[in-house]
Length: 93
Figure (cartoon, helix red, strand yellow):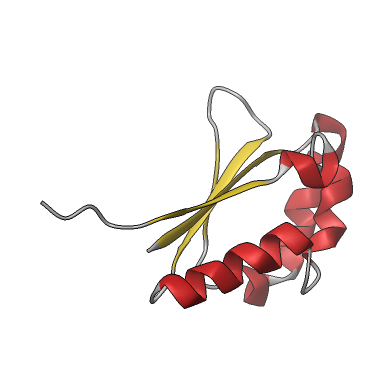
């Protein structure tokens, strides 16, 4: 399973956000963080989860701003509402 998160960091907070990311490498372990090349400030992150239980725990942590995630909400467009989180499961065929 994959937990996918998407948000826009306002231009005036982009450098602060990136410094925050760099200052906390343990938070970003096992996370791929990417920025849109055509729209700077649009970020996506995704991480693999071992199963549904782990994916749900990660989703809950991000949605509720636990473990220090709330700190970035003030930099995001629309605050906490602007941080969107989805869980994806593999498609078998």
